[in-house]
Image 1: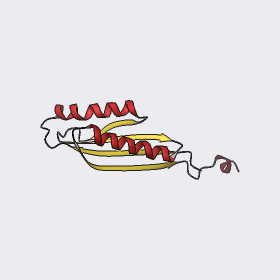
Image 2: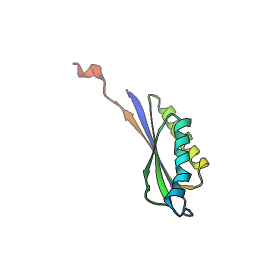
Image 3: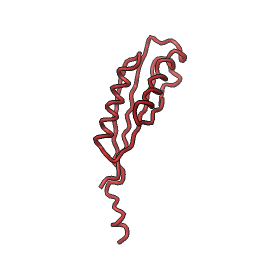
Image 4: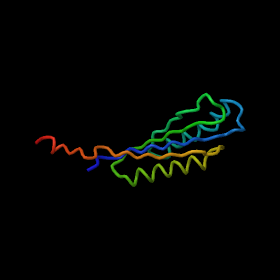
Length: 109
């Protein structure tokens, strides 16, 4: 029986019209901060921090309910796509099972 589920969403956003890092941060950072407030998630800017025209945003959550993890990540992906002045070019969702097959009572025998 699974103890829980860890869900990870990664989203690549591109904004080829942006010409400097300050402008890109002004577009991406508010979306990341609002995402943290709006949903029970951990959010980080993962890759492309030194590039001015793209970035990868990572989102993670944990629950004992698979459906809740899946739905929360879907809402986060929809929010990212709708809120920023950029194009979402890639999106990936991974949900990992925690403790599958680990029954503490079996280990006591």
